[in-house]
Image (cartoon, rainbow, N blue to C red; front, side, top):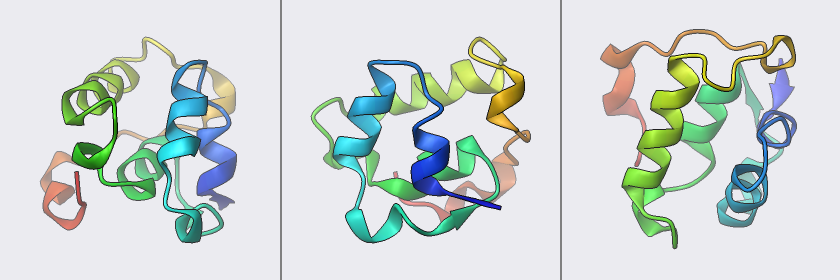
Length: 87
């Protein structure tokens, strides 16, 4: 496993800078299983300048492989587990 910081750094700009700026500093060094898990865990989406819909759209794009690339080591997000995350 890799850290949330590692995965957020895999995002293209401007998402990378925005996600890292919004991230709860104490969460950046936690381990995550993939990029999507990192985005879900790093910060509360609604509390960001971009707003919740912005991050939902990013996750939707990632899930449909718009940004997919081998270095993402992406796993499909299980929508049944949404309740365990803050957004």
